[in-house]
Image (tube, rainbow, N blue to C red; front, side, top):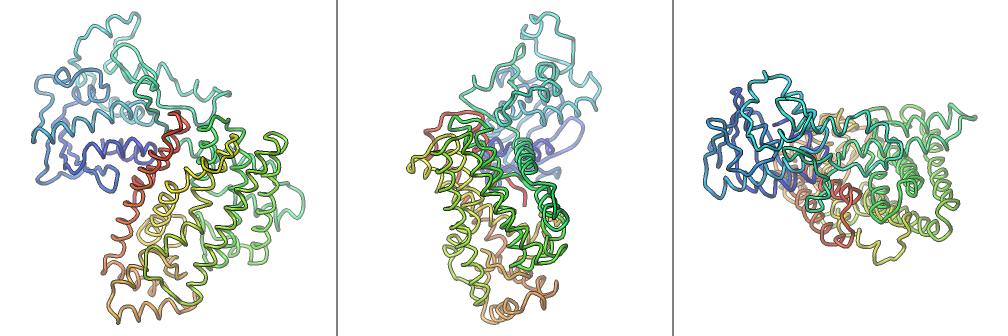
Length: 540
């Protein structure tokens, strides 16, 4: 159960967010037939599952494996899903029904994802078959001729209907239109399209697939000619480093949500990745960063001169990628893409200038609104807003009032995403984050947490933090960063940042549903919804 929730938080955050909304503030304690325990509660827009036993829960539920099987299958009414001695639930009626709605939603939508099926298949394999006995005979399974006598038919049915090797062989399949694989009803499977227009995708797999597609497109463009070691090898190394693939996902999914094809947007998505990588190379030099994506930054490994030149080349090739759409998308759409890219770049360099100016003047703004404006310009546009607008433009949508439907939702989501990135730099695992621990404090970045610290700390602490920020990067030590981190912990700045990110992300999801309601439901729109909810369920 814990592994399922953790996997869904990474791969189908919209499902987790919807289930969390049903659970609300209820604290749930779970007890299983093998003697193990788990707890479940909604926190920061997602679900938090733990193997620890919960004290004073609102609802307690005891399952044996027979009840778990039926919960996964979701093939019967609640009254028909209970074997004698297999399920016990204690709690107030309203709380119990909310828990039931939460798990019903999870079973309806999560059980269609291969990662969940794999987890539960492995769990079934660890148990003797008799633990799954006692099926309810509704006659449906018996009416299906030739169906093998298995202990958990839903799992076997879905795997037989959608084997992994057949999915992999579908060369004609678009990379983001692979929704969850049908719902077991005791006899047959039904399309997700038959269930209130709900589509769910594995966001992790989708992002990896689209990232790989875009990287492949870029590598075809970057030549092997000389100067190889001093330029093209550096570009290839940086581009192929591990990354989330957020921008390609937003670009291609937006294109397909507006009726386009993945191939219509792949070059524009590749251009965004090139711009992104060029910005990162230059940012790392300006910030004096030492690591990026788990490896030394380009200027640390190869010197500032070669790194600057490689970043410039990435921007040159990005322009080439945008212009290459003339042959396939035509003049009007290509001009629209150029306009969107220029707008994105202008916003980005303006935001970078604001932040670097704060650091240069050793100035810490007093309002979160100042951070929000800077963050929207520096990262919000080219991370969230512009990829969506560019994807829609690639599909042929050039009306400004329609493109602006993305702005507010993904502005809020982009700010929340950046705050969470800043939090991860403070408290996240270095391997997970991919940058040096506490690098933002060493660089003097004006994060929400720093702004909150300067706004709430007493005068002596502010003076000390001001002095630390005034020190050149080369003179700062890990001890200085640890001192600033301790002050942030003492004044609750990290908790404040997490809370603010959660609130912004929730507002962004609400704006997504409202502002983009005119888009018909589709697997591509579902990908956008998964990304919108990704911030609320992202583990910190």
